[in-house]
Image (cartoon, rainbow, N blue to C red; front, side):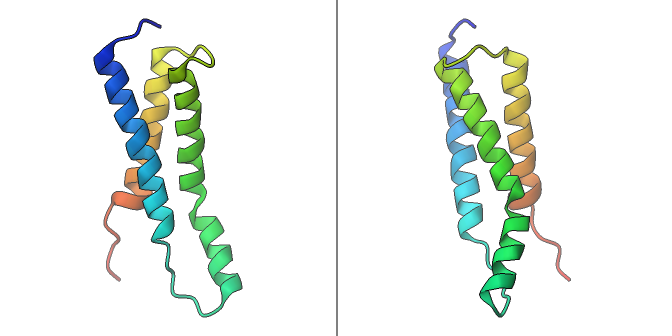
Length: 97
């Protein structure tokens, strides 16, 4: 894959935003349950998107840094999947009940 400074800057920015958004989202998990066990069970169930984003971002970072060869379409797909998960589960406003 030929290096292009603009593409490298965009990918680096998306990687940083992806890592920061999952960190902020996991730090803001407060479901208001009354005891620790229920809170932990709900947190594990609610954090699967953050784990998926982390795996996608790590795989993309490995490809961008040159640890292995991945085509551009796969990198774009992984970044798009990460952005979709981050938007759908963490950035989209919650519906009021």
